[in-house]
Length: 317
Length: 95
Image (cartoon, rainbow over all chains, first blue to last red; front, side):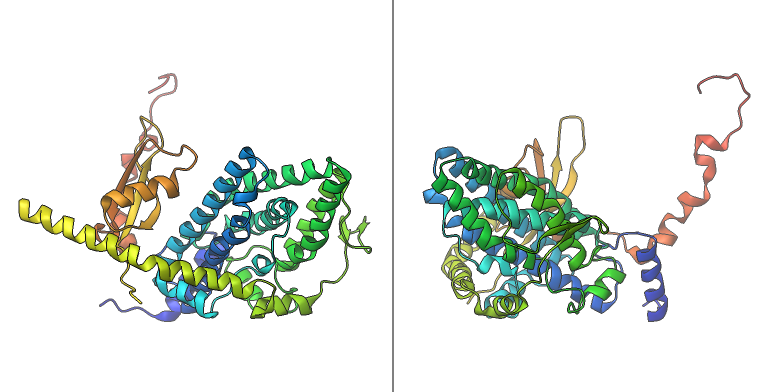
């Protein structure tokens, strides 16, 4: 057993972080760094998986074959993103199934946005344009996060997300340029999704209990409020371009700060949804539990079959 | 509820003929055949590969990061292994 001093290890770890050297799975890391990452990456994974549900709602009702094929490909990507992230969680010594059970018992959270229903086809456009747009804003800086496997997973995710956002904007643009009824449908969807999309960046910096430490460890590269501002700045001109109105009467461009001023978020609504009282929270978790429970026999059968075949091969050789 | 997990596999992908296989990530699968099929779906949805290797993660032997200094010291101290260590007369051209 090698003699090691914890404070030496901590100092070396901090030096690496400061020098922008990535931390890899077998490297020594402070227990809280490991815990913070397990929490953040597993919740990110859960968000990808739960995020398939509001979209799956429209697979059978997509307006044409092209839209249906695209939606299926997008949903398959979300599953892939969840899988990259669960693999990254496992490199930290976490048990994959335990993290999933934590989702099912309500111990682990996922993005609050997926607790809103997708009522019309325009909502699928909004999910791509706004929800994936907000996710990209959050995920691009995470490509430089200090933990290697998380950063590498994010590089793959970001490459794939840009198709998601563009296909969503295409849906919204098509509706906005369609009949008066179609345009009204797009505007109604924007009215419902705008504020939940802004809430995706999490509580304000003053209220965010994890931000400061995560910034120091370079897990996070921007604060919630910074990312939210970047998203508003990028998205408002896109809405204007296609003739839709962002539902905020206080929205004005502030020359001095080089960005938009906007109204306060309804934080009561945010905390309601985070704490399990959104429109679809119960339905989402029920769907995930059902998927796990009803799939167990398949997973057991596959394992039994693999074991039987391995035994046969051993016997034959 | 059964919590017996499928084994963990590491996935390596050759992106094109002429390049070596490179680590892409990991996944869970009941056996090697399923690991290849899952790797196709998880890691090559956009023509990222033309060949896949999978190996059970517990079969990989890795060096210990704590030993890195001692392990790689010989390559750091032998600068004469690099061509730039040597002085050659001007005018020799490309060598």
